[in-house]
Image 1 (cartoon, one colour):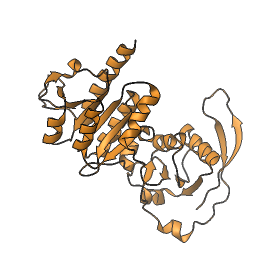
Image 2: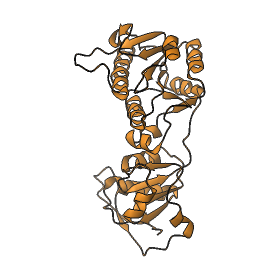
Image 3: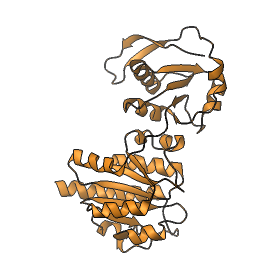
Image 4: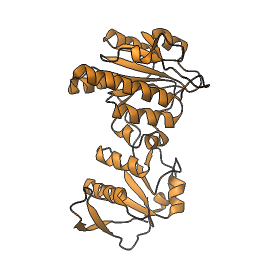
Length: 287
């Protein structure tokens, strides 16, 4: 059922978000093709993730929204931005939306989008040059959990990193689950997907980027590592950590001290701790 959402009443000027009354006209029958297409190649799911996709100006084919949902502030802004961008909004019942959700955590809204946009590592350097700051990259060596990718992207965005570098094989890509876990950060953080991670690391080193791997058995405490200049932080996979060749290719291995009984931290937690140490050093270096 196609829902043409008409914006009527612009009120509550004191509220940052435009408060709009949404009129729902009579519903029109969806085409046979729309009814049959229950699973999409790529989706962005969840209110924050869809909202950030719209704010970032990402190409969106259409938005699917449950027809009986309460239009709170985020959903209202989604409708406003979709209307301004000329993006079709479809209203379906909750069961049909469930059938089209890949994460099953859609919060009543899904955006159908083209395949993920990956960047070249040179684009990451260009972003750093545009900001006039030394490059700060995060390399993920075989991270397979989309929630870890999303969480790392969210912290990378907050800490001012210029992008993530991931391998094409045996690693998670920008999936609907990763986008949702990032709370929309993957709409703003550049992700370079490379064929050969070790060759990319060698190219970074040739360009003057220090490559610092994270491992429980490190050369130095992470607070002693220098993150103030051009640097790439390498995070290992959830089960095996850094692969042998990647570890050998790193300029330095930094560890995070632990007082508990566990031998290591979650990949996204480790990345978050070290990214904020990098943020601290870089802010102090500029002061």
